[in-house]
Image (cartoon, rainbow, N blue to C red):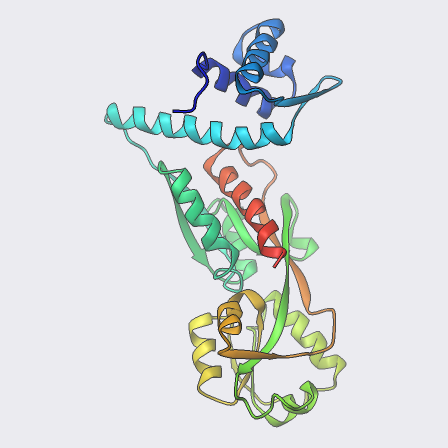
Length: 305
Protein backbone atom coordinates (compact mmCIF):
# COMPACT_ATOMS: atom_id res chain seq x y z
CA UNK A 1 0.00 0.00 0.00
CA UNK A 2 1.34 3.40 -0.97
CA UNK A 3 0.63 5.03 2.41
CA UNK A 4 3.41 7.04 4.10
CA UNK A 5 4.91 5.45 7.19
CA UNK A 6 3.81 7.38 10.23
CA UNK A 7 0.43 8.49 8.92
CA UNK A 8 -2.12 7.88 11.63
CA UNK A 9 -5.85 8.20 12.06
CA UNK A 10 -5.37 11.38 14.11
CA UNK A 11 -3.75 13.05 11.09
CA UNK A 12 -6.79 12.39 8.92
CA UNK A 13 -9.27 13.41 11.62
CA UNK A 14 -7.39 16.65 12.28
CA UNK A 15 -7.16 17.43 8.57
CA UNK A 16 -10.87 16.86 7.97
CA UNK A 17 -11.83 18.96 10.99
CA UNK A 18 -9.77 21.91 9.74
CA UNK A 19 -11.20 21.48 6.23
CA UNK A 20 -14.73 21.59 7.63
CA UNK A 21 -14.17 24.36 10.18
CA UNK A 22 -12.12 26.65 7.95
CA UNK A 23 -9.81 27.83 10.74
CA UNK A 24 -7.23 26.19 12.97
CA UNK A 25 -8.75 27.80 16.07
CA UNK A 26 -12.26 26.47 15.40
CA UNK A 27 -10.91 23.02 14.58
CA UNK A 28 -8.82 22.98 17.77
CA UNK A 29 -11.91 23.79 19.84
CA UNK A 30 -13.89 21.07 18.07
CA UNK A 31 -11.18 18.49 18.79
CA UNK A 32 -10.48 19.79 22.29
CA UNK A 33 -6.75 20.31 21.64
CA UNK A 34 -4.52 23.36 21.57
CA UNK A 35 -3.95 25.33 18.38
CA UNK A 36 -0.18 24.64 18.35
CA UNK A 37 -0.82 20.91 18.73
CA UNK A 38 -3.30 20.89 15.87
CA UNK A 39 -1.04 22.99 13.66
CA UNK A 40 1.79 20.54 14.32
CA UNK A 41 -0.43 17.60 13.33
CA UNK A 42 -1.35 19.28 10.03
CA UNK A 43 2.31 20.12 9.34
CA UNK A 44 3.25 16.48 10.00
CA UNK A 45 0.61 15.32 7.52
CA UNK A 46 1.78 17.77 4.85
CA UNK A 47 5.37 16.55 5.33
CA UNK A 48 4.30 12.91 5.09
CA UNK A 49 2.36 13.59 1.89
CA UNK A 50 4.89 15.98 0.39
CA UNK A 51 2.14 18.47 -0.47
CA UNK A 52 0.67 21.66 0.94
CA UNK A 53 -2.92 21.01 1.96
CA UNK A 54 -3.97 24.47 3.15
CA UNK A 55 -3.33 28.08 2.21
CA UNK A 56 -3.17 30.24 5.32
CA UNK A 57 -5.00 33.51 4.61
CA UNK A 58 -5.24 35.51 7.80
CA UNK A 59 -7.13 33.29 10.20
CA UNK A 60 -8.57 31.17 7.41
CA UNK A 61 -7.21 27.80 6.34
CA UNK A 62 -8.33 27.28 2.73
CA UNK A 63 -7.84 23.97 0.97
CA UNK A 64 -5.36 23.95 -1.90
CA UNK A 65 -6.24 21.91 -5.02
CA UNK A 66 -4.11 19.10 -3.56
CA UNK A 67 -5.93 19.46 -0.24
CA UNK A 68 -9.35 19.31 -1.89
CA UNK A 69 -8.41 16.15 -3.79
CA UNK A 70 -7.04 14.54 -0.63
CA UNK A 71 -10.10 15.58 1.39
CA UNK A 72 -12.46 13.58 -0.81
CA UNK A 73 -10.41 10.41 -0.46
CA UNK A 74 -9.70 10.87 3.23
CA UNK A 75 -13.38 11.41 3.98
CA UNK A 76 -14.40 8.38 1.93
CA UNK A 77 -11.77 6.23 3.67
CA UNK A 78 -12.88 7.19 7.16
CA UNK A 79 -16.53 6.67 6.31
CA UNK A 80 -15.76 3.21 4.90
CA UNK A 81 -13.76 2.38 8.01
CA UNK A 82 -16.66 3.45 10.23
CA UNK A 83 -19.00 1.26 8.17
CA UNK A 84 -16.68 -1.70 8.63
CA UNK A 85 -16.60 -1.19 12.40
CA UNK A 86 -20.40 -1.08 12.50
CA UNK A 87 -20.57 -4.37 10.62
CA UNK A 88 -18.23 -6.08 13.09
CA UNK A 89 -20.25 -4.75 15.99
CA UNK A 90 -23.41 -6.15 14.47
CA UNK A 91 -24.94 -2.74 14.07
CA UNK A 92 -24.52 -2.14 10.39
CA UNK A 93 -26.43 0.91 9.26
CA UNK A 94 -26.98 2.09 5.72
CA UNK A 95 -27.29 5.82 5.17
CA UNK A 96 -29.93 6.70 2.59
CA UNK A 97 -29.61 9.80 0.41
CA UNK A 98 -33.03 10.81 -0.85
CA UNK A 99 -32.79 12.55 -4.20
CA UNK A 100 -35.45 14.06 -6.43
CA UNK A 101 -34.44 14.10 -10.10
CA UNK A 102 -36.31 15.97 -12.79
CA UNK A 103 -37.20 13.53 -15.61
CA UNK A 104 -35.53 15.79 -18.18
CA UNK A 105 -32.12 15.40 -16.48
CA UNK A 106 -32.46 11.87 -15.11
CA UNK A 107 -30.81 10.13 -18.05
CA UNK A 108 -27.78 12.41 -18.39
CA UNK A 109 -25.49 13.59 -15.62
CA UNK A 110 -27.12 11.98 -12.61
CA UNK A 111 -26.59 8.24 -13.30
CA UNK A 112 -22.85 8.74 -13.84
CA UNK A 113 -22.42 10.56 -10.53
CA UNK A 114 -24.68 8.08 -8.74
CA UNK A 115 -22.58 5.11 -9.92
CA UNK A 116 -19.43 6.81 -8.69
CA UNK A 117 -21.12 7.45 -5.34
CA UNK A 118 -22.02 3.75 -5.11
CA UNK A 119 -18.40 2.75 -5.64
CA UNK A 120 -16.97 5.25 -3.16
CA UNK A 121 -19.67 4.98 -0.49
CA UNK A 122 -20.60 1.31 -0.04
CA UNK A 123 -22.08 2.24 3.35
CA UNK A 124 -24.82 4.33 1.74
CA UNK A 125 -27.46 4.05 -0.93
CA UNK A 126 -29.47 6.47 -3.02
CA UNK A 127 -33.27 6.55 -3.13
CA UNK A 128 -34.44 8.32 -6.30
CA UNK A 129 -37.85 9.71 -7.19
CA UNK A 130 -38.79 11.74 -10.25
CA UNK A 131 -41.55 14.20 -10.89
CA UNK A 132 -42.27 17.84 -11.75
CA UNK A 133 -39.89 20.41 -10.31
CA UNK A 134 -42.50 21.96 -7.98
CA UNK A 135 -43.50 18.57 -6.59
CA UNK A 136 -39.88 17.68 -5.85
CA UNK A 137 -39.24 21.02 -4.13
CA UNK A 138 -42.31 20.52 -1.93
CA UNK A 139 -41.12 17.03 -1.01
CA UNK A 140 -37.75 18.45 0.04
CA UNK A 141 -39.34 21.17 2.16
CA UNK A 142 -41.30 18.53 4.04
CA UNK A 143 -38.15 16.52 4.74
CA UNK A 144 -38.81 13.82 2.16
CA UNK A 145 -35.75 14.67 0.04
CA UNK A 146 -32.16 15.75 0.70
CA UNK A 147 -31.38 17.06 -2.79
CA UNK A 148 -33.26 17.99 -5.94
CA UNK A 149 -31.50 17.88 -9.31
CA UNK A 150 -33.38 20.03 -11.80
CA UNK A 151 -34.20 23.55 -12.88
CA UNK A 152 -34.26 26.55 -10.58
CA UNK A 153 -37.74 27.20 -9.25
CA UNK A 154 -39.49 30.59 -9.33
CA UNK A 155 -38.09 33.13 -6.87
CA UNK A 156 -41.22 33.02 -4.70
CA UNK A 157 -40.71 29.27 -4.15
CA UNK A 158 -37.00 29.41 -3.23
CA UNK A 159 -37.17 30.97 0.25
CA UNK A 160 -34.84 29.05 2.59
CA UNK A 161 -33.37 27.05 -0.28
CA UNK A 162 -30.08 27.28 -2.15
CA UNK A 163 -29.63 26.66 -5.87
CA UNK A 164 -26.18 25.53 -7.01
CA UNK A 165 -25.54 25.78 -10.74
CA UNK A 166 -24.36 22.61 -12.51
CA UNK A 167 -24.72 23.18 -16.27
CA UNK A 168 -26.92 24.70 -18.98
CA UNK A 169 -29.56 22.56 -20.66
CA UNK A 170 -31.14 23.39 -24.02
CA UNK A 171 -34.67 22.51 -25.08
CA UNK A 172 -34.65 20.92 -28.54
CA UNK A 173 -37.27 20.31 -31.16
CA UNK A 174 -36.66 16.68 -32.20
CA UNK A 175 -38.10 14.19 -34.67
CA UNK A 176 -37.20 10.83 -36.15
CA UNK A 177 -34.21 10.98 -38.48
CA UNK A 178 -36.23 10.48 -41.68
CA UNK A 179 -39.06 12.85 -40.78
CA UNK A 180 -40.42 14.49 -43.97
CA UNK A 181 -40.60 17.90 -42.29
CA UNK A 182 -36.93 18.21 -41.43
CA UNK A 183 -36.19 20.10 -44.63
CA UNK A 184 -38.74 22.80 -43.80
CA UNK A 185 -38.17 25.90 -41.66
CA UNK A 186 -39.20 25.09 -38.04
CA UNK A 187 -42.25 27.36 -38.07
CA UNK A 188 -43.58 25.83 -41.27
CA UNK A 189 -42.84 22.30 -40.05
CA UNK A 190 -44.76 22.93 -36.82
CA UNK A 191 -47.75 24.22 -38.80
CA UNK A 192 -47.87 21.07 -40.90
CA UNK A 193 -47.13 18.30 -38.41
CA UNK A 194 -48.42 17.39 -34.92
CA UNK A 195 -46.35 18.12 -31.85
CA UNK A 196 -45.69 16.84 -28.33
CA UNK A 197 -45.34 19.58 -25.70
CA UNK A 198 -43.79 19.35 -22.23
CA UNK A 199 -46.35 18.94 -19.44
CA UNK A 200 -48.16 22.05 -18.14
CA UNK A 201 -46.40 23.37 -15.06
CA UNK A 202 -42.98 22.13 -16.13
CA UNK A 203 -40.30 24.80 -16.34
CA UNK A 204 -39.35 23.93 -19.92
CA UNK A 205 -43.02 24.31 -20.90
CA UNK A 206 -42.63 28.02 -20.12
CA UNK A 207 -39.68 28.29 -22.52
CA UNK A 208 -41.55 26.44 -25.26
CA UNK A 209 -44.61 28.67 -24.88
CA UNK A 210 -42.38 31.72 -25.13
CA UNK A 211 -41.14 30.42 -28.49
CA UNK A 212 -44.63 29.57 -29.74
CA UNK A 213 -45.99 32.99 -28.80
CA UNK A 214 -43.04 34.77 -30.42
CA UNK A 215 -43.55 32.84 -33.67
CA UNK A 216 -47.34 33.16 -33.69
CA UNK A 217 -47.89 29.40 -33.51
CA UNK A 218 -50.12 29.12 -30.45
CA UNK A 219 -53.37 28.99 -32.46
CA UNK A 220 -52.14 26.91 -35.40
CA UNK A 221 -50.36 24.13 -33.49
CA UNK A 222 -51.71 20.58 -33.51
CA UNK A 223 -50.87 19.29 -30.03
CA UNK A 224 -51.43 15.55 -29.67
CA UNK A 225 -49.56 14.71 -26.43
CA UNK A 226 -47.96 16.40 -23.42
CA UNK A 227 -45.05 14.62 -21.75
CA UNK A 228 -41.43 14.82 -20.68
CA UNK A 229 -41.27 11.07 -20.01
CA UNK A 230 -38.49 9.52 -22.04
CA UNK A 231 -40.04 6.04 -22.62
CA UNK A 232 -43.31 7.52 -23.87
CA UNK A 233 -41.91 10.40 -25.90
CA UNK A 234 -39.31 8.30 -27.72
CA UNK A 235 -41.85 5.73 -28.83
CA UNK A 236 -44.20 8.44 -30.07
CA UNK A 237 -41.67 10.34 -32.17
CA UNK A 238 -39.96 7.24 -33.58
CA UNK A 239 -43.27 5.74 -34.72
CA UNK A 240 -44.97 8.85 -36.09
CA UNK A 241 -44.50 12.23 -37.79
CA UNK A 242 -44.75 14.12 -34.50
CA UNK A 243 -42.20 16.66 -33.30
CA UNK A 244 -41.23 16.84 -29.61
CA UNK A 245 -40.03 19.79 -27.55
CA UNK A 246 -37.73 18.19 -24.97
CA UNK A 247 -34.52 18.84 -23.02
CA UNK A 248 -31.24 17.71 -24.53
CA UNK A 249 -30.40 15.28 -21.73
CA UNK A 250 -33.49 13.17 -22.36
CA UNK A 251 -32.66 12.37 -26.00
CA UNK A 252 -28.89 12.83 -26.11
CA UNK A 253 -28.18 9.15 -26.71
CA UNK A 254 -30.66 8.90 -29.58
CA UNK A 255 -29.25 12.05 -31.15
CA UNK A 256 -25.67 10.78 -30.93
CA UNK A 257 -26.75 7.43 -32.42
CA UNK A 258 -28.54 9.18 -35.29
CA UNK A 259 -31.98 7.82 -34.40
CA UNK A 260 -33.36 11.31 -33.81
CA UNK A 261 -32.54 14.68 -35.33
CA UNK A 262 -33.12 18.30 -34.30
CA UNK A 263 -34.50 21.34 -36.07
CA UNK A 264 -32.59 24.56 -35.48
CA UNK A 265 -35.04 26.97 -33.86
CA UNK A 266 -32.63 29.87 -34.22
CA UNK A 267 -33.29 31.36 -30.76
CA UNK A 268 -31.14 31.62 -27.65
CA UNK A 269 -33.79 31.64 -24.92
CA UNK A 270 -34.46 27.89 -25.00
CA UNK A 271 -31.53 27.26 -22.65
CA UNK A 272 -31.79 27.22 -18.85
CA UNK A 273 -29.69 26.36 -15.82
CA UNK A 274 -29.79 22.90 -14.24
CA UNK A 275 -28.53 22.64 -10.70
CA UNK A 276 -28.88 21.33 -7.17
CA UNK A 277 -31.53 22.65 -4.84
CA UNK A 278 -31.19 21.95 -1.12
CA UNK A 279 -31.91 23.59 2.20
CA UNK A 280 -29.44 26.10 3.60
CA UNK A 281 -29.01 24.04 6.77
CA UNK A 282 -27.63 20.90 5.06
CA UNK A 283 -24.99 18.92 6.94
CA UNK A 284 -21.44 19.24 5.64
CA UNK A 285 -19.64 15.96 4.84
CA UNK A 286 -22.89 13.99 5.03
CA UNK A 287 -23.56 11.37 2.32
CA UNK A 288 -25.88 13.89 0.63
CA UNK A 289 -23.11 16.50 0.62
CA UNK A 290 -20.69 13.91 -0.78
CA UNK A 291 -23.10 13.16 -3.64
CA UNK A 292 -23.52 16.89 -4.28
CA UNK A 293 -19.75 17.21 -4.62
CA UNK A 294 -19.65 14.39 -7.16
CA UNK A 295 -22.43 16.03 -9.17
CA UNK A 296 -20.51 19.31 -9.26
CA UNK A 297 -17.34 17.61 -10.50
CA UNK A 298 -19.15 15.51 -13.10
CA UNK A 299 -21.06 18.59 -14.30
CA UNK A 300 -17.80 20.20 -15.43
CA UNK A 301 -17.19 17.33 -17.85
CA UNK A 302 -20.87 17.19 -18.84
CA UNK A 303 -21.08 20.89 -19.75
CA UNK A 304 -17.78 20.76 -21.68
CA UNK A 305 -19.16 18.37 -24.29
